[in-house]
Image (cartoon, rainbow, N blue to C red; front, side):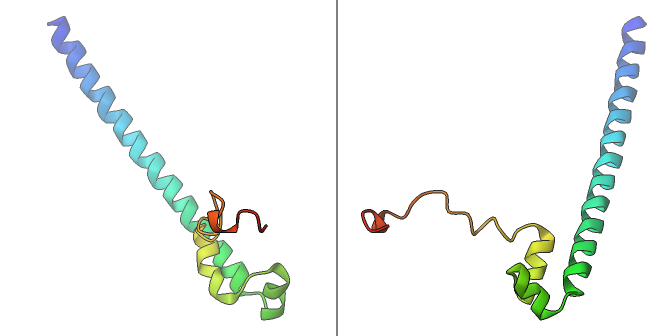
Length: 86
């Protein structure tokens, strides 16, 4: 009988923990979406001259807001064709 009570208690504890994880994930997703919208709105509100001063183009706003702008720009290994030249 004690084992059955402990098993049911563990099932409820696991279900509650899973529900809390779901709410945490939903909150984090909502925060990320709000930050994306805010970043996109602020950058879209800048003039082309202000964007140029920052070194970005209007076409870069979406990738900057999503956080994917610099991922492709980072070179992780050197170009072997340029050895001895640079």
